[in-house]
Length: 250
Length: 331
Image 1 (cartoon, rainbow over the protein chains, first blue to last red):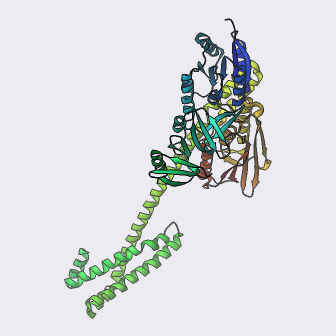
Image 2 (image 1 turned 90 degrees about the horizontal axis):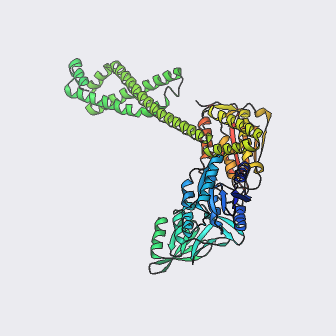
Image 3 (image 1 turned 120 degrees about the horizontal axis):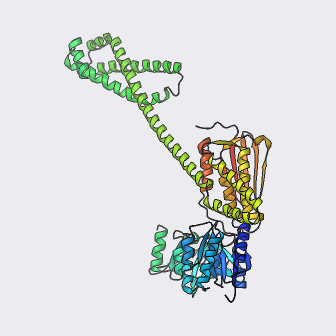
């Protein structure tokens, strides 16, 4: 082994963090380069220190483990460490090397590290990125919030605050009454993950929140525009209008 | 009716036509009166009257009904036949008809009481099965919340960490966890416990969580000594504190304070539980079962569905419980 595996522990509970620190220090191949105790600082430290391996809790303040990974530019190898067993499948879908269920012992932890060494340190491929999205989707059946990055800041937007979504090349513009956010996602992703009772895709370029509709205006033959409560007017396609009518029981 | 006609023709030597008419008039008349008795009898019932007034009421009512029956019957017979002799003959059988009327009256009353009794019984059975179902459901939910696996596994993980780093604290934590679990399994959904025992258990729970969350979790329990002995449904506070930890501490990096205050207010014990939370974070959409269960249990035990109130403000979540002082618990 020419160089050690640079490792970061991301865990919000102190005793659990201490235990991991102890376990990591006992394995000579590992070098502990940092710790984080919440989602925001985890994104920051991972992007800054570019570790080879992170040992990641799922339930944390600010961002969940999955949301945090989504926002990281640097993609390290991941071992999950959690008391929740329901995310195991999703963790493996994003190619996590191992999934440790708390509490676990030294032997189990060492086995996970051996897997990391055996596999070699792979970076996340674009394909894995795709599965990460599926994992986030399954993590919470219906999307309740969206984590976005604005420069150095991370913002968590409750979906209830969204007026509408607009496609924008490889991004989606998220319009809220206060602000505009960009998220590197597809319209398809939002269409399938947002609550279908609340969000309707009225056009190739628009998904709107039903709670913010003011009225529907006749546009021209077979086509309508949707007027939002903030005054915005969005064009609905024929199929989009049909879907909208169905959702509004018109 | 046929028997009646036969008796009148053969026994009293009346003509067949007159006998048939008399029978039809009196029997139909009683049928109508009998039907009309349904409503008055809802008020003259064993549930609503004391035995003596019940008997007096029934007798008065019976005399009235029989009087109306005979008078209107005689009148109708006279109208139909316009025959003085028929009327005179009817006069002779008056006492006999009064006895028959009394007999009919009794049968009708018994029949109605039987129907009412049967209906009440059915209602009672339905109500009781619903009650039992709710109790079972609450018990199940309670059981589930007691052995909340994430709480348990995370606590065991903390304990396992402490065994290596601070064995003395690990020992303390395991004992606390055991006491907490034992308190949980020794109480069921219908049981009552004194407030001080409940608070002791809440302190255990919060102490265990404090080991996990450190400075992020702070709590303060203030209880007026006069409330200590007051009984309340076992483990009713537990889900509220679990909620406070889940919605307050889980998502916050800053210290979150959970407080409990209780005091006697008139004939109520008022318990106020508050937790701060990070207003920056979008709220977790919990399933809401925790709060719902508490409210259901209170409703079940005290037959009042406004004993729990939950209010969310800018950065504070408040739950207020009202427990009847020295309550009479519905069995």
